[in-house]
Image (cartoon, rainbow, N blue to C red; front, side):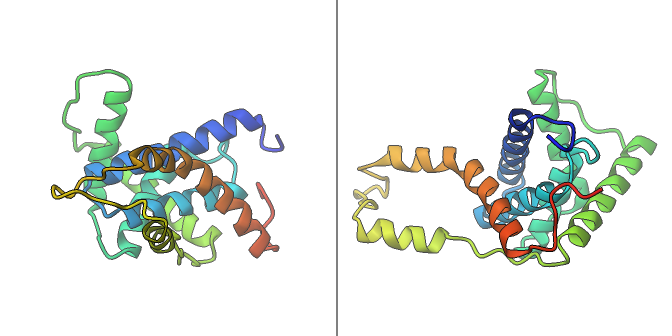
Length: 191
């Protein structure tokens, strides 16, 4: 509430930001680990910074671009902008139209580059993310949840994987709380 937003609004913005990063990553054909990295960076940044002062969409774009470079699957910033432009049109139920390369586009590109720098600076260039995915797969194999038939599709417990995706946003929100615990010098919503 110190930033002027109530908890529900902030949580909603966090979830929407992670969903945007996931959708953009899919359209950009990024590996899942890159999308997860982008979501973690997004949560860490907004754990200390306010949604009121920083554009959620610009930071989402910056996190996708930065995560693609971190996970060695780089995408051009122009591609990231085009994908977010398309997602915005789909969200607003408008007919997708190509992005015009005018001064507004150049300004947006510069804002994303600045947002990427702000994310790096705020995180102290500590952008390494240790994902639990490998451990989760190992546990699933041990629990025999990963049984497949001849076609390679999951036979059992496919609902488990759907539930995992739903919980992913909440998981990345909790990552921000762990970041605060591990980095006590960073205070929430510094000005």
